[in-house]
Image (cartoon, rainbow, N blue to C red; front, top):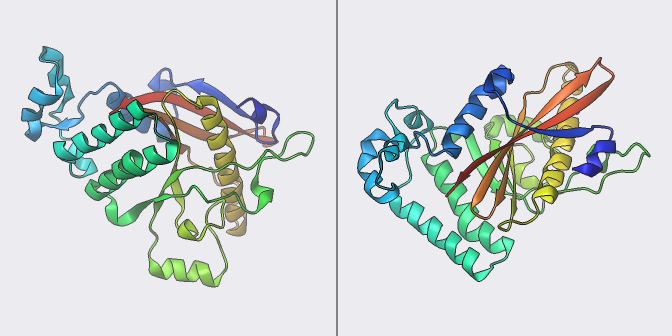
Length: 276
């Protein structure tokens, strides 16, 4: 992160504090992430028999049950067998010291696919492994104050939006790409969430730098598209980001800010989310 303090899009970091102080467009998302991180209301009430296996046998176990039905609005719930399989692979990878690629293949890809499969928004979203997606063109990579460019970074996964075949056809005819990369797999699918993975206890600062660089480039691309549409000053909503370090998930949110319309400030907010 230190390298971006001197960039044309300076990035600073702070932790979520009082939810009431957050912007309205990120407050609900942050509240949900906080709740999930604490293991509160994560199981639909109709699966209350799962507490016998997942709980510790005390009264606090009931906090895991969602009696308000909010979790069901997100879609279905993966079975315990699916969760056991993912946890088994994660424990094995941790014990054997497996490489990041092994975690991505046996744990993170499976988890993303199951989450997508059960999601209420499955028809409107997709997830992809984007480890080969470089920031292109290079002009989108943030510049240092000395006019030197930060070394280009990549992310591991992306959750993006499905726009439909007709929209994709029109974009292709106009030679318009929607993301900060020319990678064909998501060329016409705007990235909604970027995900970076690391081994347990490894590379937290590097992961933040990677996502900051990647997301700063996304902001630059969005500004370019807005200018093309004649709406240059349209505000860009916060960009949700996820860092996974083995078993640990961290939620971050990158906000695009302006200071007297002179330069943009990107503020990264972080919050420990969950363990599986």
